[in-house]
Image (tube, rainbow, N blue to C red):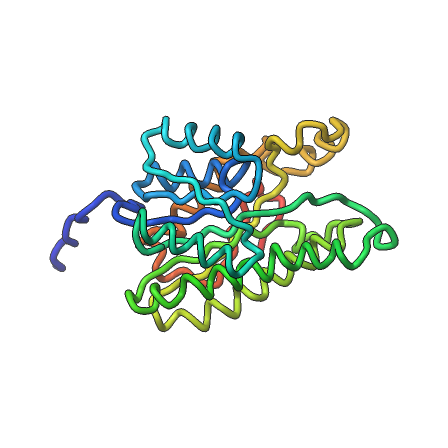
Amino acid sequence: MSAPSPAPSRPPFSLAGKVALVTGATTGLGLATAKCLGLAGAKVAMNYANNQSRAEKGLQEVRAAGVTADLYRADVTDAAEVDGMFMGIERMLGAVDIVVINATPAQPQKSIEEYDWAFYQQMLDFFVKSPYLLARRALPSMKERRTGRLINITSEVFLLGVAPFSAYVAAKGGQTGWSRSMAREVAPHGITVNMIAPGWIPVERHQSDPQADKDAYLATVPAARWGLPEDVGWAASYLASDEAAFVTGQTIAVNGGKTVW
């Protein structure tokens, strides 16, 4: 008879002692993710690019839940601003253990004739350039400590080929491919790279979306309910934990069964 496993030294999925950076963290999915990571024990750096009053409101909401958190303003598509943000986080909270890459611009659905290349470039900057810049800055410390978590918030649209939405879908495809390659590159250093692919989870920016569109989408969700921002946040908390140390290069679809592998 084998000996019983030793009792865990801390609660499962605890992020106590960790520092988490969440980009685009003051509204929507990013805000919920910041709160969930903090409730799991992490100190949270909440990134935003504009609208300071809205950012401060989000910070107060997270702190009211008992989370240790601070705001860090930076354009995550700009290398100098990313570097400055990391220096501020390292000075105030410590070395970054977890990076959740969530920041996003507006995502209008248009036919390809209505897009211009500048819009395509903006999508690529947010979903390919930004993950590259954030990883490049975070990885040296993670490699030195032989631990780290990169979590990309992707989207079900890549799997579904949603149209007319080519710029966003293409950029999310690039983000997915980048994550898969990076997962293999950094795995020998104890670092994981994973993806969370949410479905349509209504947040503040969806308030004016047509009700008919919402009804049509909901009718296709096997779980027969809307997802909650916290559904994404708790998935991120798992991927950020020590218990997920052997999970890398994977996509967790948070969409009630709309896509299955």
